[in-house]
Length: 140
Image (cartoon, rainbow, N blue to C red; front, side, top):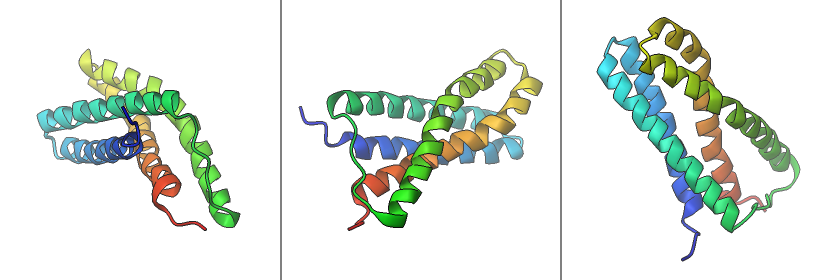
């Protein structure tokens, strides 16, 4: 089996997660709790599929070197460093945020979601940017 489709799949899951997190936020701001819940569960699913695809890709392929030079290289590694750090930070934040919601602790859920949401969104969006810079951008 070839694994060449995984980077695009992973970027798609990151984009879906970003879209679902944003839509879920808009729903809760409008008081549409069930729609918010559905979006956030779907975002969690998309992020989980991303993580499974990411781990599989790196187990099979390893790291993909960045081919850009100059300013593009600086931008890429700055985005990659912040993305990687926050990707580690976001996992327990998502777990705590979801746990509060599942237990009906909505005040605590809302407090931590104010931190979790923008970080989750940043990690998802920068994941797509990293994919684009590695696989799609013409940086020669």
